[in-house]
Amino acid sequence: MQVTRCPEGALPRYSVRDDAGNSVEPIRDFLLYLDARGSSPNTIRSYAYDLRRVWEFFDARGLEWQGFNIANAVDLIAYLHDRIDLRAGRLTTAPDPERLSPATVNRALAAMSSFCDWAIIAGTLTPPNPMRISKSINKPSVNDRHRPFFEGVSRRSASVRVIRVRTVHRLPRPMNDDQVERLLAEVACLRDRALVQLMLHGGLRPGEALSLHLEDIAYGRRRVAIRCRDDHPKGARGKSRVERLVDLHDGQALDTISAYVMRERPRDTDSPFIFLVGGSGGRRSEPLSYAALAKSFARSAARAGIKSPGVSPHALRHTHATRMWEAGMRELTLQRRLGHASPESTRIYTRVSDATVLAEYSRAMGLKP
Image 1: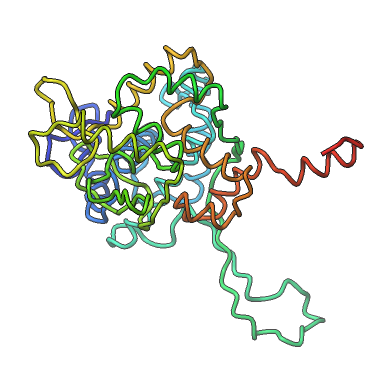
Image 2 (image 1 turned 90 degrees about the vertical axis):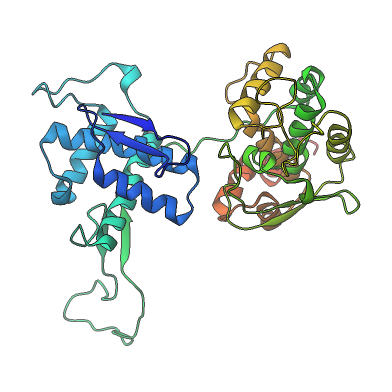
């Protein structure tokens, strides 16, 4: 069973095919639904790979997906987490390279939960969703001899537990000042320097930076508008569905963008995107893709001698968020600047360098602040 990319312009953008080369129709219909909802190409691709693993489990167990139940869900966790070779008829753990991380297992479980939600809506699966366990908490857990005064008045809804495995909450890995200076010294062109500075000083996601239009830059007000678009031909787009404004008063990012637009950006094009492929090749004037950005970043990092794990274009966003938190920006304000939908996503940066914890520790040790 494999995931294949569909021809340009075809929907869905990815498909899952069995060993005979036939499309797995339930997954195909679900991916079409995701396309219609406006999900990003990366999201659709991830769902395709995750559901491929689930369908391999069905094949190994000899199950039909319509009969999927809570007992199967428990077996699915074991299959994904331990990579048990069920087809051989014995419990043999696969080699370590074939093992899946807890985060990957949870992503596959979440994909199956979303698939079941869609199947229930489409009328092809009988509710409830087997990936979720509901427990009513409207009735107090007391015996018959005691009746609370407000019994029956509470409007609390049922508690829902999503089936998942425990994961490690890892810290983001921001770049230090020395790494940033060495990286900028090795960036070859104005375009790549502008992209690095946008993500470093504005906290933009790589997809947000690549999908910027010329009209999104307000040089006079020194701010950038992050808009919800899905018109990038290479699939680059922002993760958030909420538009926001990002102020840039660092004195570098917008000046570098202006210099790039005036000096290096191809002039013989009517493309609205800021960051384009240069040179004289056949791809000249095409919007820059994330793959091209990642390769350029990796080359610059290699020349700078930066070999730390997790160093990628997204690490610049982590670096910006950590710097802002250390400088005293409040959690809610930082959440709005980064465009996080949940405060939990922002709160992770408070664990990177918590000034309060450091101050309390210094006082307890009798150290000078």
